[in-house]
Image (tube, rainbow, N blue to C red):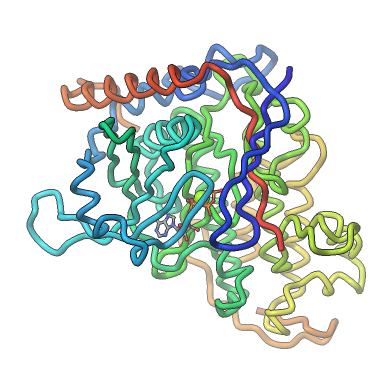
Length: 432
Ligand SMILES: Nc1ncnc2c1ncn2[C@@H]1O[C@H](COP(=O)(O)OP(=O)(O)OP(=O)(O)O)[C@@H](O)[C@H]1O
Ligand SMILES: [Mg+2]
């Protein structure tokens, strides 16, 4: 199968944006890609999924989403002024704005509004996926979608998404931008746990399994208390249906994070996310990006770098983020590196499930199942330098929900009409 590799290049500066580079091609139907993946699931052994898919769940839950008009969102952002711009990804700009509460009473609500680029169908496809998945999920470690706007006017098509505002930006900003203070050790551990819980919910706690497919530090947003919330469901896919082990897809994701087995075969499973989680664990430990092209060849890939300093060797401490100075637990760092290695096992089936990852992290953080992490006190240990101790029934579908579903289905068709070609997309990881 030939595929288009569509490299999203947003590496080096805030102003540089995605630069698609076409490499190969595939022939997957786009409308299929945004709706059910059932017909593209490859039959093999084993199964995890329920008969109710994302579409059915969306039908039931979509009512909670608000539908905004374009003028409303233009007003909310002062006509999308640059002054309100808070970020930019490969598929559009993000603005800070304020909207009226639903009953128009009370204080305005601060929101983040993502305005998708008007060029190209990939943005539309991602928009539909984002609305569908975020319309269904509900978890403290997933960003909330408040609503959306779809307008087809004389000036082209507009697709926007309105999210809860996350005041502390992304994990990427805090780990890799020197303008931010280094994240303290305990906070790093709590972010690891919260992000793992978000993924475990998607993989194991929903009626239909959701594979995130683009797990990376820029998609982990931080709220006012630095609680992590996963954002960007544009590449998310429904997991395999009953009797199947994986979903066959065009390969999409970000260089440096995508599992090698997925890149090679296009077979997507929840274990592809587990691999990406392992990479992010190492990024949090080391303060280094998964790919750093400015470094000598042998050090460019984070995985190659960390493997040169085995966990049980005296040299292990070399990999730890120097910005932490001595304020971390080497013992816990070793446990996290071991966990990361298990997520990075070559064979996908040998990687742990995210619920197991959550349990391991809870043990490391010393968290009771219900409780919040204990405030371990950290003291310098004497063994090594730098060591410190420290679902509703289907029920009646309302008319408005039906309308929304019909609208979304129509928009999906529209997207399908733009191009029948599937794409193989790999965002280029940010590199320094
Ligand atoms: N809900 C939000 N609240 C606050 N800021 C946000 C929110 N969503 C996005 N942002 C900001 O906008 C930036 C860009 O987000 P976006 O998801 O568009 O791109 P990205 O994650 O950097 O790259 P990619 O296109 O690969 O996903 C984020 O890094 C973050 O700083
Ligand atoms: Mg993102």
